Length: 375
Image 1 (tube, rainbow, N blue to C red):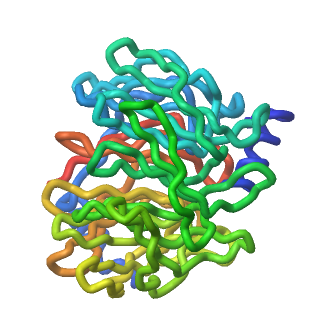
Image 2 (cartoon, one colour; image 1 turned 30 degrees about the vertical axis):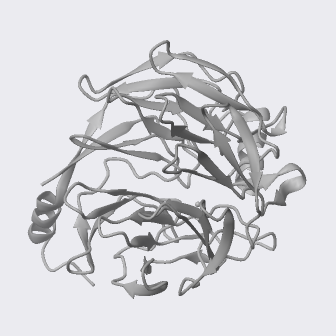
């Protein structure tokens, strides 16, 4: 059972602040799932966790850090070795946090940015992870503490952080850039709309596309804007066909961006998906997913398809996975996760996809990890 007191209050606080046809034949359905790919179990995480980011390291290992667990907000970190399919513990963050981001920099180190915890509230402190030493050390502080923001690595090696929640549960318009060579944050012009639980995608031409998210009033935004690093400014882009938060955005091989699902317990979740074309500045609705979902995961596969997995739906926590094919513009059924999960992390590996942690509607935090292999 979940512990009483601080852990439960931490989770409640997090959820408020952050944080969400009849089968023709059973044989045909199972055959279709097997053809789409299979999931297999990996070893369990050392700490059950959700709201944790994952980062693929240059040596092929995967770093996960922080998040929320049965003991509250976590500082612990661990590494997954895909060859041995095992997790090992490493030095933890100096500051416990959730709702943060981690990004592999061109220097080979990983930068953890922002987040929140009960003792500090929203966190301005950044930390750098050295994969060789396995240690974290302090990095420059953000000019504004934030959580549930976006972080996008740009072509010149700098990191763009935008939006999020801050002290007093303020919803932010501000953005800032981290220079890893100077270990310095600098302010950039603010976005036109304050938002959190949005997506940010680095485009093929070096610009960054920010879409949707939640506003201060709790409404889901249709608005979209683009950051141009050459001009150092944000400009409006065509709005999405519908407002979304807690969605996924995936850059396709042809330079377009696929956005799937989104929503929350109220007003509910959507199965719709749409694609943005940066050349024409237009959104186009594509085939609906077979399952409405939000707080889910998505990963581009080497063959150009997009794997969509897990999440929350109006009916509960999702095991179902789907594959979007840009050639047919349709979703097809994928193999089911071994454990339903949302608020999990997803990482594309050289030989598959790793999903770790997460939680379920019941409040259970999932301690397991699993691997997907396409067929």
